[in-house]
Length: 311
Image (cartoon, rainbow, N blue to C red):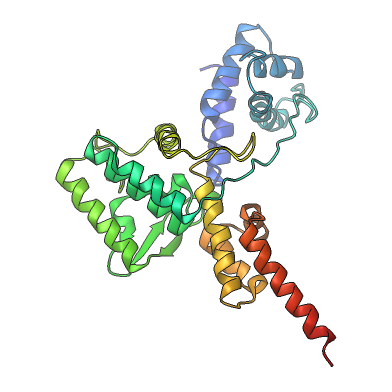
């Protein structure tokens, strides 16, 4: 193994020991190391890093090119501590100002239509899997990856909770389930075990091969469902996504709190904990100014103003 590739492995091992997942970093950094070696360079330079980051060509999204360079930048900072000649690419190079995608907030009718479309998928196991996955995402607000990573023992039938382990921020949490949700999960488990009695993975959700769901495939199937029920983008960046079910859950939760007359500000830490955030302000990313929420907030403000005016 070359000196540079060993440095890559040491860097990844160190970062992961601190809790970072670094998905795809192995491929990125070993490919970069091969590029540097093929160029005959003795050290990492900013010029080489930018050239490698731009290899996908002019048709690649600027955000993707910036992400590639960002991965190398982190490695270069680490390497410079041991090899002072290493150049760390400037943060201004290939900089892409990411814009927040406009979330698609689903109505109850939309979710029901998506689940109905999932029931029409074939074979039967795929239909059951995606109907249940969409339903569970909508009532828990969990991340898609969290539900795909669930194992069978992570559903605590006695306590009525999902145990979500070592997810983003390296945290674990329990998500309480309504009785109707538990019944839906039991129904899915029965179908899954009937159609896939010898699975190849212990995951709660399985694909038609008995393996754990794959993130890319799940999104492809969901986009088929979106098209089949006729959901349309509300903006250029507002294409209906699986992840938007998490946004929808956050907005629906706030609406229910307003309707119940609760102190929404005081409740926000609860939403943050439920959604697996490390601090409440992260949950505000998921709040959208949907009409019903704006109307309820406006009514609350109007009432507060009236109360202040009264003697």
